[in-house]
Image (cartoon, rainbow, N blue to C red; front, side):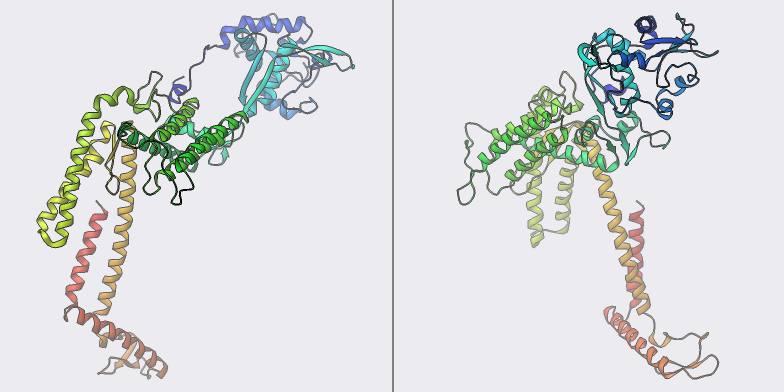
Amino acid sequence: MEDMRALGVREPDVLTRVTEYLPQIIAFIAKLVERKMAYASSGSVYLSLDAFRDAGHHYRKLSGGSGSTSAAEMAEGEGALAAGGGGEKRNANDFVLWKASKPGEPAWESPWGPGRPGWHIECSVVASDILGNNMDIHSGGEDLKFPHHDNEIAQSEACGLGVCAMANGNNGSSNVANQWVNYFTHTGHLHIEGLKMSKSLKNFITIRQALEQNSSRLLRLLFLLAGGWDQPMNYSQQTMEDARSKETTFKSFFRQVEALSRNYAYYDDPVGWTNTTDDGKQNLDQDLYNSLLETQRIVHESLLDNFNTKEAMLSLLNIISDANAYLRTPKVRPAVLTLKSIAVYVTQMLKVFGVVTGNDDFGFEVGGGNEEGNSSSNSSDNHTTMIQTLASFREQVRNQALAAVKNSNNGSSTEDTIASFKSILQTCDNLRDELLPPLGVRLEDRGGDDCSMWNLEDPKDLMRELAEKKERDAAARRKKLGNQHTTKQKELTKAIDAARDPKSLFRDETLYKEWDPDTGLPTKNMDGTDVSAGQTKKKKKALDKHTKLHNDLMKKTNSNPQSLIDRLTKELETIAQQMNE
């Protein structure tokens, strides 16, 4: 239950235990025996599929086929309950309702002796006690279709549960049969990194482990964006990153609309749909509103189509994409009320999907949200004036510092003054990045002459984003420093090589015995033979190349190459130290 609450799943109306239903289970089985739909054998009780079919029922309604169950299917479906029942059954496909217990096994007294309930019987007994004779919708995983749900249907309808329906018996006569469940829904399997989750594959992950890495909102977005509720769902780093990206898209749009709504003066600002294309033939505001209407149509039709939440979610993201493109239009005067209508509709649908739980008109709840609403409508009014004042103050200081740095770069100030102004800017950034996020305040600088934009958000989300940003920045810094280190190392190696006296380039006494005193080229090999003309030509070419590099270095360093080598060595040490910080 704690895991379900953490995921944002509502509590059930009723909780039951099988051990609390033993008398009702025994009575249910006894009724099946009385109706001659079940029989006792060696202390166990089995449902008779032959009697079931003779009464006009069809077995394996969900999984199809002839109704015959193989030994492998029986073993997989019944497990230990199927063991040892071969000689007790009238039909190999009959399944156990009550299993006689062996010494040491759990056991309850019954008319057939000590035993325990079969795997399927508890569901029929408990469901009929709580919900009555007929259920409209019954859900479960795809792997429960057979044998569990097929056997539930059989034992329930054999006991007379369900609404009446006509059916044909094996002898061709018409009989009255019962339909216990109107609709079954079977969810797809959960896959981990592309493989079905299984303890045997050691890719098992619990809800709590998933929540340690992701918020419940992200997990719900993953479910909604999967191929379909009845299709396999893949939980992987890639799919979670995709869900996180979609969450960021929603957040960013809500922040923009909130800022526009906060600063919108209905009596002073222009109203109406006045934005058009340059040729005046297309009304951008009307187009945006039409996109909203089209989105509402697509979402409605998608949900009518087997609850296709993926298409519905993609449609919501598409209208946000249209709105963002609209806001990026040069010189656009945003139709704030239309944008707010989009944000409200998107939020309403996210509330239906359980992604949003607060009571705000639009946007994600602050602080995680709850049924009573833990959102900005309850807290932002108390802090709006303070935050707006703080943001305006910071903006003024920041703009003045930027102007001063710009003037200083034009030569009107000293380096110390520039450093002071940069320090002011850093202080402003620290307020934005370090001080406000723990308080649940997001402050963003906007380009051009636009004011800074602020929003109230969940402090945990902001701190997580800040930590992720710091890690990305640190990784980028490490990569940059690594590239600098590689470049400096190459430069140092090149300088050391170029600093070498050209005459000593081939001074290797393990290879050569004599050298030309003017050029330093080798003339005699160690064995006393002359260096060949071909080798001399190659070495002459290499010597000329090295001599040019050496002369260039000497000119560059005023005949003091060691000073360059020392400087590069020191720079390498500094970079290495920064990489280890």
